Length: 512
Ligand code: NAP
Ligand code: MG
Image 1 (cartoon, rainbow, N blue to C red):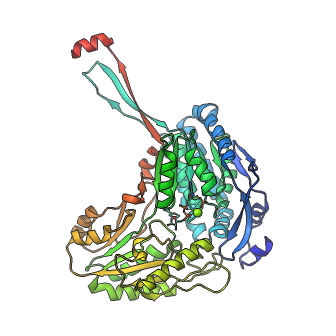
Image 2 (cartoon, rainbow, N blue to C red):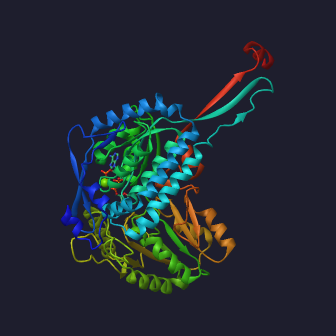
């Protein structure tokens, strides 16, 4: 392992080294337990292609154990008895603990996922801690409503908002810690207990999070963390008869499988799936702003973002300037190991993902798209790919239709069209996660926003958001909204209560 770490010029903190070297088990019922079948998974540093740790591979038997613990924690003991204020305090304590451990968490995230250390330290960890604090606030603010049924004096009626129960949460590898916090924060605020399965490629910060949660005093069974692969541990969770809800982020394809598996006990399902988000550039747009916004819009996190602006649809009058401007900036992006100072884009997360993206690039070339820049793998063992721009793409091409989840932008242009036709171009995808509109005209901005089938719309920006702005997809981009009040309510059931204030007979007579 030391040889793997030595490949980085940066000196990794002693605490990070110690964490990597320790044995990683499953967090079940407040204790670290080895997987029942003893399986292990290698954790690979995508900048070096070397193994940096191994983690436990959970199977159905471990999922069973965790469900028993989570059910017990939900129905007995301190969790159901704890007030919203008590849960909020724990979430805030965890947020503080995360912030205090920022350096180690950021190093682990960079080693595990590859993304620049400057980003993990400045974005992933502090944004994650803030997200937990925000969600902690909801623990004291969930409430039902009083409702008038019948005539005044007939009934006292109201709704209660209750936690759904035991929740299974399955997350991807693109923002490992942020995704984990985005899942556990609202579930815990609502009063649920949970099993979290990180992606097999990036399990380290979720495991560290589990240790920190134990340190700040989450009761046993409330947070269970099971590393393992999707087809085993993930599938066991989705099919489990005593899990009340599955919350999933990942591909649309796996989302469909989860839905089918959840049918057994009709568990609640929320899905945050893929996207093919358009950036629509109107003829009156500020070209410099478009270039400055579109480059991070697609290349942030090496394009491995569900909301990446992967289709740029530009009015023909600006197409050449916008394409050249984006290409020039793309060429200047510093691609390299996350620990190298100045790195702006790290490697792709895995060999598999690199090959997937390269296959898409080949298909773009085969189908006649014009490669403007990029598409080069950097020498060495890491999974580095240069930011890639295709122009003159057509709606039927695979690179335009399918989510690539890599640093590949597809540019197409349109002639003078009405807003309905422009919206049709943007909406011509099975996905509907995000879209950005670039214009200086307020009427265009509002009118086009109304026509887009997209869970998020940004104007003169791409990737804007915060913990209180709901996030989720139309169409095949998902079910439900995370973040904001909607994100916490996703973990609640409504119970309607009606108390007769008159004798039932009297009420029936009254109505009769
Ligand atoms: P994925 O296969 O959808 O994996 C996401 C999570 O689901 C992982 O934890 C995965 O486990 C788990 N999983 C896989 N099969 C499962 C099953 N049958 N039952 C239950 N859980 C299962 O995504 P991926 O392989 O990591 O990436 C593939 C594509 O997904 C990407 O290229 C991209 O298109 C999309 N994606 C979207 C997002 C997003 O934010 N919307 C994020 C990441 C990826 P493993 O650990 O075994 O993989
Ligand atoms: Mg996978």
